[in-house]
Length: 94
Ligand code: SF4
Ligand code: SF4
Image (cartoon, rainbow, N blue to C red; front, top):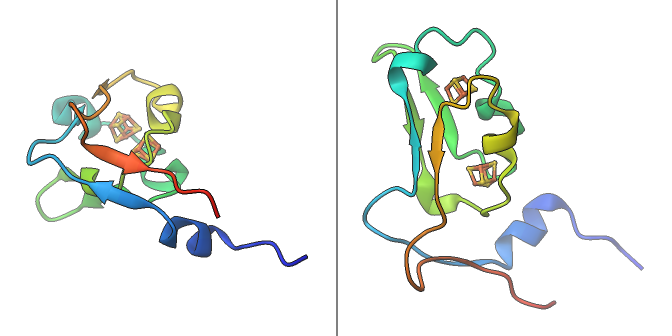
């Protein structure tokens, strides 16, 4: 039986986005962070480093709520909460 790729699995998810981010990295810490591991560890590519603005971009609408970024950040710089109410990701059975 064929296994779905990560991209195919992500395609089966449903998102209901809040207008406010539930992920709030401390940019003062992020600016000096040499690893920026959040930009590589997130399976949904939520974090992008914007070199010209010297700022972390957070595409929170795509968050899978897995918690990996909160655990992986070596500086505990992310104020991490679940999206409020019924917002966030819905995992559908396939
Ligand atoms: S790993 Fe942590 S401190 Fe570094 S850029 Fe990401 S959120 Fe900021
Ligand atoms: S909780 Fe998971 S999906 Fe959401 S931003 Fe962090 S690593 Fe990415």
